[in-house]
Image (cartoon, rainbow, N blue to C red; front, side, top):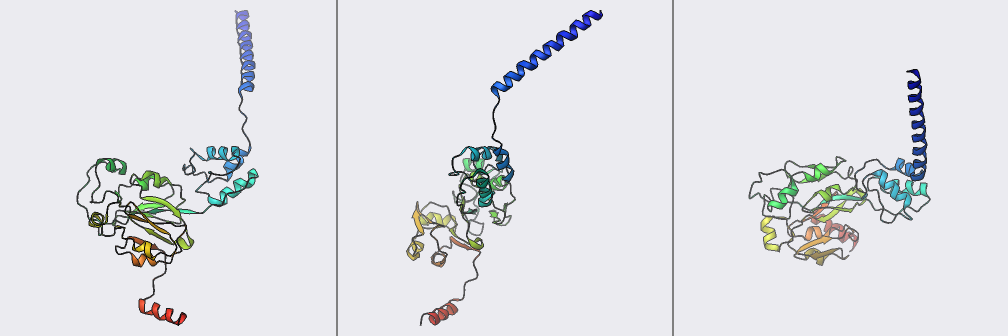
Length: 289
């Protein structure tokens, strides 16, 4: 009886030893070498795992940075220039020049401008509503107001306004990850160049219908009248598909287009109040007698 137990123990011990040896050689044969710099780069990333860089997570993005010859096409929108500079220093590469961006809503169709003509009683999801009908108003391009963009934002930078039914973006919290842009089925949120003091001038309309139908659907719709184009001295405004668009890289914030727009579809954000017309004319006469 005792000899049987001894034989069994010895046999199992030999089998375990042989299995360990086999597993060791297999592990050595198929082991994957991982560059230790990946951990160093990952440590400087914000660990948001938001997907704004185009990769599944910060780990995958760190691997891409280590393997890439240069940083062309690679960007962490959350960390911005600071994080990309730190990663470049670790890897001995040149950091790209990054212009900070911020999400902007290209729609100003609140109920006072875009009255409701129907009631949606379905699943509160913009993607589903967009496939079913044009929306609760006569504008088939405007915000549907079902919170898809708010749910997509992981940085608490976007919330729906209960009065206007439109998303409100907090520039200080926005990381330009682009999740809200991807979530919107109407494509009315875009990333625009972030200017000093968070100032913005843009056409807050996405309606591509002609002037008459667009204005009937929303009082502040762009009617493609070309007045803004004619008054812009910097060729920053173009009209395509019955819709004006202001190029942020060319705009100098002269604000002439804002006062020229007959429908008020061009918004100026975070600018100081304008001087009264009489006072402005008197000041101009003093400067240019």
